[in-house]
Image (cartoon, rainbow, N blue to C red; front, side):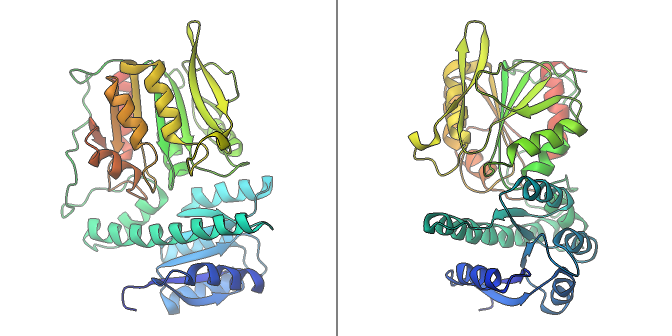
Length: 374
């Protein structure tokens, strides 16, 4: 199994370690190389076993998951997937883990068989994405050390290496608005794996008086988008909050779609208004869905829309971006080198609808230039 994905499981519950192992080994390409009960044992196992991916519990004796994660990122950066409880405390700790460099998180399964099957699918997909991301970063950096790999894993902009193979033209950010571009009425952002740190990087660099309203779909389970919005609001100049049904999209404010429902925009009088939708009415896997939001933006805003597809696995957003492009709107995507997972940006680029490909660190300047903000 020379090409297998080597996984280390770190969890203080023997039952959970066995459950995670069963979920993962259902995939013939995944190999469990170790299973330990606390963060200290996990650090030692990483040194000796050299796994490709680690699954990490948060609350453990001897050394908790957050402490272990910090040490991993300092000593031997590699993809870590946090196993999180669906509680307020669990959401807060998980967001902290993502800010420290965790690749992603998976909620621990509840009691129902449907829930367990959903978690099993999500866990395997994210382990595969984590392993692929690590190998891709090694390719892009030409194996010249770990600094760029670490930066990309964190969701921060890594310097593009000379040996990197360009996958799309990346134009320098101009100081004047590009010809053919127009000031958008609304900016829609679709993002998934690697999203919280990338959103922090983006919104930290946008001014508080940014003159165009922003609406974001970040793939997360219920209970996580509100703490994310609150965290970003505390540290970023713009007002950022979880969108409420009936809330107006307006300048100086970014709204994050609430998890567990779909968010669409409606034209009500002279305003663009957020409306939540029962997610059970659609067949989309993600709730909220980037495609659902973007389709509504295409319908009500058309040529005055800008859609930005950022880091994330899968293809959510490609159909919606295609709809916006078909109505005359503009599409940007994040580049491969700075995407934690180059899935969503790749599929929208391959659909042939992307106008600009930008590294994460250039997106804020490009946006402020486009809208004429200081």
